[in-house]
Image 1 (cartoon, rainbow, N blue to C red):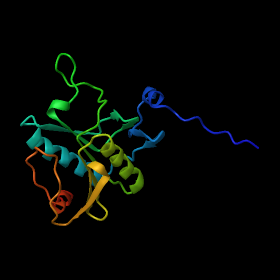
Image 2: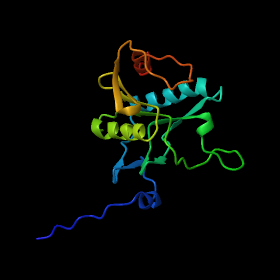
Image 3: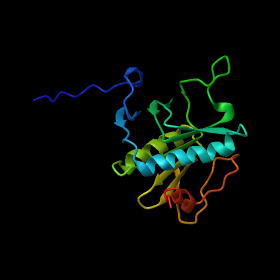
Image 4: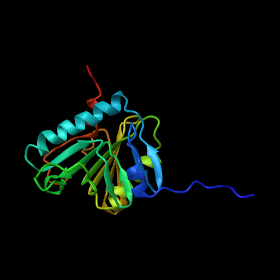
Length: 186
């Protein structure tokens, strides 16, 4: 008896598919739809973008983008936050920002949602690291920790009062406690 196998999609075929809501990643020839944002995730994502952009964008150092599709290294992913150095942001010939980003982010941030698998999200950040991303964060709201992912696939755990690594050139200091304090509305 022969078992029929579903043919695997290529990256080009994936990119021709209509966008899903929420977005889907294409990594390791697999389509993985991101979970719908919930309160903690959404607030952390928005506050990270505001905080990073409040310093880096105004000084033309970098820009933090929420939910931006990045296609590179044989994959197409949508990190929760993608930070690009100012001089690496793709532009049109007229100088406007390009719609397609076919390069790796300099800093990729993922926020683990309750129904996401740690392995899948970590593999996305490791893909970024293998393909030139300087810094990755995997934020875990459940245990209030952050994994830092560095070149060479080095991973560090940050908790409590630990100072978080920031993309070089961005004058920002944050601790794990500060990041999770953004979730308190009191």
